[in-house]
Image (cartoon, rainbow, N blue to C red; front, side, top):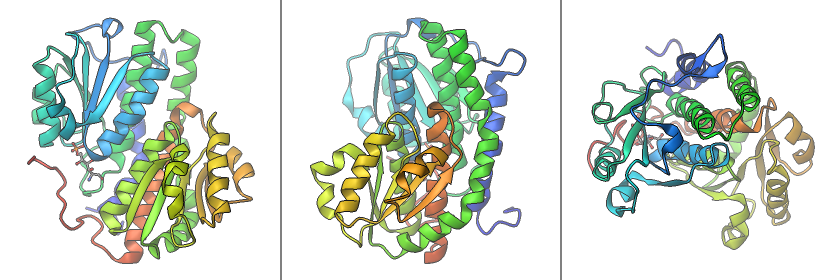
Amino acid sequence: GKDGYRHYMEKELHEHPLVIGQTLQRMVDPASRRVMLPEMPFDLASVPRAVITACGSAFYAGMIGRYWLEDIARLPVDIDVASEMRYRNPPLTAGSLGLLISQSGETADTLAALRSLREKAVHILSVLNVEHSTMARESDVVLGTVAGPEISVASTKAFTAQLTVLACLTIATARARGTLDALGEEELVSALLDLPSRAAEVFTQGEAVRRMAQVVAEARDVLYLGRGSMFPVAMEGALKLKEITYIHAEAYAAGEMKHGPISLIDRTVPIVASAPYTPLFDKTLSNLQEAKARGGRLLVFTDTKGAERVSAIAEDMVVLPHVHDFVAPILQTIPVQMLAYEVAVLKGTDVDQPRNLAKSVTVE
Ligand code: M6R
């Protein structure tokens, strides 16, 4: 049941801290505080490249995984949505890594992409929530996201669990490839282990999220902005808003705004920015100043350090605890999903079962 929550989506949003913790328990050895992945039939150290593919929210999780694997493990990564990847025929060296991400393990396009990668003698590693799914049977290795059943059509907790797994995979890959020493691993693992309690603190921001929801609910179009690993967080926020509130939303890499969408900006198009205090904060801040100068209303998701700098121009802010850059996208995802939820409640839409959508898309 819904355990007293109004919708499954609300219940599942509140499970973020729990599922991040459960997923970490599966992947981090408590004694050594090191990432321990299951035995793999191939060596992460000798994989020449990874190809990541998935659909919808799982694809955005994959995009964040790409930033991590490139930056921390120095692994070349290609990524595309599965509906494109299945027909792309990319040239791949045998022994490359196919990294598939899916909550259900049954998404038709992701499964077809898995099969087309397999034909190229690529190792198949799948990040799955349903561990007895078709994709699980056809993978060389499955890394489970321990999110439990997800009922709401809009994915929430499965997404942060996917990110948690991808973060652990990045650490293991970086260690194998010699790009992360023991001290570095300790730092990243500590940041991950700290996340469940930081994620629980996000819910103290409910009032601020509901204030923002009042603004967004009145809009016809909303622009989501983010840079680096916050760009996919913006994409996740925009997808969630479209999916359950039927309000048009678009996510842009913050630096790309001046190449077109800045002409849209006026009082009627709220700007939702994901801007915690990471090394890219100043860049995002200057994009937000540009938007403000054109009459944009800024609704900013930030952290305690970022808030000091952005409060002068923000119409409203959701202020999260400041965490390590590595895990910031995981934490910042939670309030953008909450915002979509609160807007849907205001609009009175069918939150758990939005029109025209199914939980798992098993046809092409
Ligand atoms: O089961 P999957 O993770 O493969 O599903 C992928 C997408 O269909 C899914 O994430 C969809 O975009 C969600 N409804 C988004 O909230």
